[in-house]
Length: 409
Image (cartoon, rainbow, N blue to C red; front, top):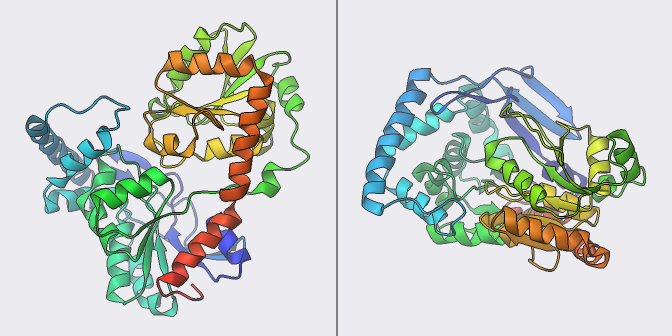
């Protein structure tokens, strides 16, 4: 979406990527890179996309990398003490300190295991680099980030990194990735917290907050209809608390389920939409899991809901929050996720909560006060239209490109 918005603004963009879409963990740190798309060049949305095959590293390498990291973490924790609790504001810095002591060769083994290993892609970027003005590389914790930063610097070409940084994740605190951030001409941060944190742990990094965006043309479509969603899924007369995210432990959907059971309003129901990753059964009189929805049904779901909730602590930004705000809905995030906590203005456009009990209390307050729901939802929508549309994000990014030497990209 960023790329298409830049193209619409008159910037020339070529994308170099792999043939893989369904990347999955194979063993330890080894990621499997299948050939889901044909190799070659295609034009998508006005953008030339060049795809290259990627190799999967040997299973033994990923297994060894994982074992070495486990051993390092074990001894580092003996020195640093036990890890802060999940959700603690101190956890991110603790993870960084853990990884700061990892040996370079162990870190390199981990990065190579993750991949992607695509020498044809790397060679083609090296061959074509001088025909561009700026290189943008994304995302953590993949090998492409340090490789592309090194290639760009060797070609004396400005390089910008979009890390999609998860501060609480060990692998995101890799020394090699941190070194790449320090050598980049600019680092794009998604939230104020991420910008402050990355600048703190990597003092040489030139970090700029740009955020993420939505396309208001899609989210303002007059065809979006909440009542259609209610009728289709048998939710007429219910007070909908919507959860949108993959059904996996990291999204903490069980916390949302616990919260809905504590809400006094008998009409309140938790509606969950997202890919079933963990395969765990979901049951409960006050929970409806709908799986992955079509684009039309998802937009209808945002319109139909009364409150949006996502207790995840593993977010680099939280696009679903701005999607809910775009339909003028109040949102509830987790106070233990720094990126989300810095995105939501607590008490103005939503709430940040520490546990299921707090979530239930805020849900009850919102369901019982239509004026409060409307005011918070409208405040969120105003924030989105002011700051988080793709055209606004693209304008900020283009200014960064031009500031570091790129004029036509």
